[in-house]
View 1 (cartoon, rainbow, N blue to C red):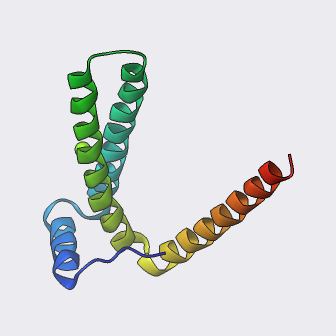
View 2 (view 1 turned 135 degrees about the vertical axis):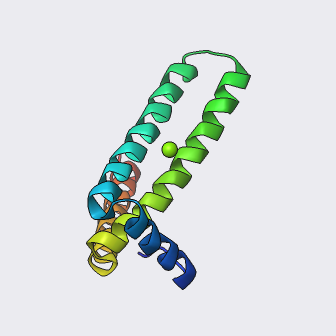
Length: 111
Ligand SMILES: [Mg+2]
């Protein structure tokens, strides 16, 4: 499994690390963005309990925004920690997920 990142995007990510504090700052931003995504996803659970449609729509847009932020910091993290190894881990995890899905289907079919 891999994410397609252009050479121009790689340059932007590398320039950003050079301009804004290197790997330590990059790691802090990853933590911040993960926490922001957690916050909007937790809020979604509360909204499902019965708030207004407009509130749900605003939450959905906030989730989209935070997932976009995660895409960017994920790409930055891959630049910092080794895209090839991370992609190998991701592929192994997706393969394992596919196996679990197949096993779950088999259990359901046999019940
Ligand atoms: Mg954010």
